[in-house]
Length: 188
Image (cartoon, rainbow, N blue to C red; front, top):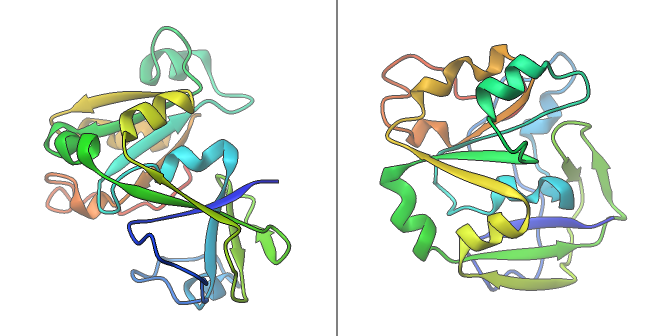
C-alpha cells in the first residue's frame, strides 16, 4: 500500500510525531488524534493534499450508496471520480505552487478508516520524495476535475448530501468564517 505526506519543505529526512496545529473536535475516546502523530494519506485520496498548503478547498466523491440526485447536483455530467473546488483567488498559487510528495513506509501506520487518512505514533523515515510543480496537471493525472469558484460558500450544503465531502483549510476561504461555517477537516 502506498502512503504519502505532502509538504512545502523538500528537505525532510525524518517525520517526527507532533500534535496538530489546530485541534479538532473528536469523537469520545479519539482525542489522541490531536496529539503527536505522523499523518499520511493513501494513494487513492492523495489528491486531497496536492495543493499549496494553505489553499482552501472542498473535494467531493461518490460513495457506494450515494444518491444519483446528489451525484448529478454536486458532480455533474461525466461522472468524475473526484471533484476539487477551489476559489479563483487561489488559482495563480495553484498553477505556480510547488509541493513535495514524500513516499512513506506503511509498517507503523494505522488506518483511521476516514477518507484515506493514516497515522503513525512513531517517527517515520521517508522512502522517497518527488517534487510536484504543475499542480493542476497532477490533479488531472489523479482523475480529479478541478472547478474554480469565486467563493466556496455555495458548497456549504454538500455535507448534507450522500456524497463524501472533505473541506481543507476552510478558515482561509473567502467569507467562510465570517458566515459562521464550520471548519470541517473531513467527512460528511
